[in-house]
Length: 611
Image 1 (tube, helix red, strand yellow):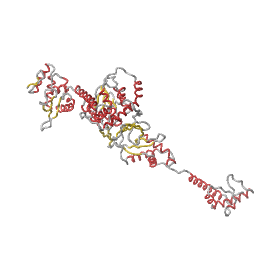
Image 2 (cartoon, one colour):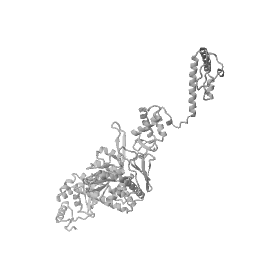
Image 3 (cartoon, rainbow, N blue to C red):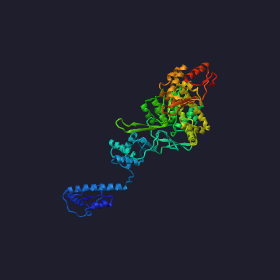
Image 4 (tube, one colour):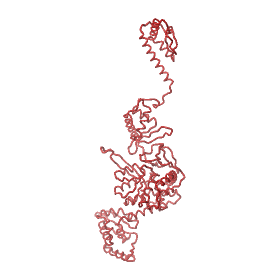
């Protein structure tokens, strides 16, 4: 029977086989026993080279076949080890952990994410975020909350691609906690909601699947992928249309109709300013009777500036207002009837920019901070508040009832077709306006001075004189003052009382004295509404007068508070417009009034004052 051997794949294998003493002994023993039993040689094994016993060194004879089995097992193991070694030598080098399956731990998973250029950070409100890459031919980065389900899904997908076994839920949860830790080991990054400005450039988040943004700078704009974490996204947000240049910005008023050219300038300036978060904007208040398309106008503006699943909001619960302002870049409220004093204050704070503190949980004292400055849209039948602070921060647009009505499908179809073109036209004008903004000045007469300056810059970009915008804004403010005066019956008594005095001879006295005199004026003129509207105490009269100072000044009534003395603090009142009685009865009433007030002058029926 021929001897057994194996053709090795390397010299190292032959040497190891030749030096295997038990193997040589087993071969000789097995060869002898086979010849004795059969009297002939064993058949040749296919594919194995024949080797005679003379090629093996001399060994002692073994009578047990068990030795051969042990030696064969050792031979098989040796061949497997050599084959594995040769495969390792010929295999390409392992460049990263993704090319091989690993025993996954939370630390390795986060390390894999960082190898993919993921960045962990926290924002200005103390929330943990990650700037995470996506895969595929349209790969891009996304800014995700670490606690979000989207980031959890991204980690799970990454884990399944490299783990030997399906990742355990605890591994993913521990990796998320580790990501939070890393997020607070870096400096905070400021994230914005839809619109952001860094002083030299303006960025607008399109909120599309590819995370594109619009960059406005140097008189032009462009669309490009986000190259750094700048924006946070909320669930309600929808993608903006891809803008197309070359349109007409005044096409806006085909869908958001207003009556006058002055209101068109104000609405256009407000719409452009809503893209520019560096300045506070007044609230845009759209009022009108039922059927005046107030909500339709509001929806159109919202869809251009901040498309949302909830384009208009109706929940006016005070405890939720700060969350609404925080989550919506351009919050829009419909069919608002009346604001309380606290609600009006909250809206004023949201316009000029402010923050709110809240407890994170009901069971601890950890704080959550919300800061916001928002362009706000409100619509309703009447202005929801006539408080002067509220109106000073408002632009009021009055609408008439529509003469003809169109179906919603028809309106939406036309508007959706125009949206990309209109968006591009607004960006064209915005880029030009920002070029003019640095050199623009303000007249100093408006409380919302930044908006007035922006409007003057827009007027220049349109080729108009800056004062054209001032005239439009001044007219709107004048209408607001009239609305305050018309809604305050006691104003009539104050106006008639102040008309008897001028800058040379003013009335000065305490709030208590003034309240008594105003009641007498209302009684003399049988003005029951004014008498009912007058406050019951001097302190409340002082508060009401402080609110009416600006509006009464537009009517020529000057009210000034005198410096406090040791006893009290008084008021000075006079009129810059001479009073002219229109009837003999009014002149007689005025004479009676001056007898009551104890003045030493009174007007004659011709309107001239005699001593």
